[in-house]
Image 1 (tube, rainbow, N blue to C red):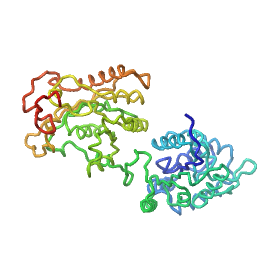
Image 2 (image 1 turned 135 degrees about the vertical axis):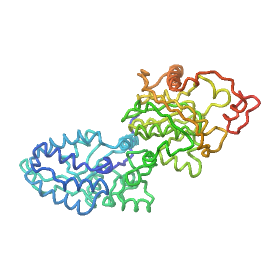
Image 3 (image 1 turned 45 degrees about the vertical axis):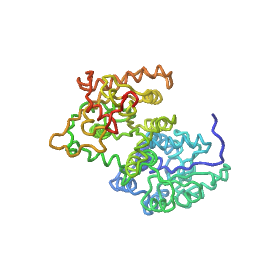
Length: 477
């Protein structure tokens, strides 16, 4: 389907917006490699870029950048162009994962996508071309007889200059600012942000954060899902992982093994069995040991709950409305995996009740197979055992008072599965076979006692029902 024309555009700043930090170090290195800059890198240069990464643009730093135009006098234009190509190849993989998805959304909506940055045009255009952007608005340096002459050709694209350059580009390209978006981290881009109908603060510096909050502008961090906040560059799940230690949970003992099977980088689907409300925390312990934050799929009753729901949403939890038929959970999980994240899914969907809870055969739903097909992400099986002793389904809270004889929780992580999925879609029957293989791999991580068929007692059955009572016909539950 061809994108529909809207007459609008989306303008993206580069540093601390499309990129998490500054492009300067990469561009400087490329200019040195091309022989354009002959002086050695100094600690002061590193310090300036470090301050920029931490707090964003400052007026002194931008005045130094403006002064730097003069020092470009005499640079060979062809050498700078070669440096721009080299820098682009290094910077393109560093574009923030959710920035790529946001760019694609604007394309599908029919908007032109434009980079608007103070950085030199020659150094930025190759990157924009690699990203498939429609155009670049950047600072053009004057050139005479193949050499930079130390002047600016047109606007110095910063502050009001960036707004004016964007306005001129819109006039030349028949773009309506009332239908447009602008994304930036810097309060010095307020002239541009205020000129569009849809301003968005991305990874905002402290002053822009205050202004954006007061004006109720959206605030995004493009290295995490929408709605996930960051404080000091740290999101809630990372903060929690830094202090998540089994020894701080005295009412349970943990036996965790195999976390080295979780890839250190890139998309991963963690597929686990479901025995207790305690399962997400148990899985989080394993992920913390592996050093990988995870995005959990959770039923809407948890995500929509007062107080706890806000905490869950701040960690990038994916809301699932079972039975609605909505594709939103699958789409959100695909987006997270395409961004290189870990997605945790419990294919059983809910904790089995009654005799099903004690079955040696694990039954899963089709979502995990569809997710694996759509993304090609490796599926890592994780087996949980003993979590039901920490938090039985019939209890409203975990048994935190049981510190003298805490139950043992066993967590085993298996190697990524070789599922051989070559198509992004398949029949229900084919997906069911994949699910069967995944559930069998999860079962392989469970202790031998899980494979024994037992005849549960009335008390054991009672603990598998939220109400704590066994229905007269358990099969109806």
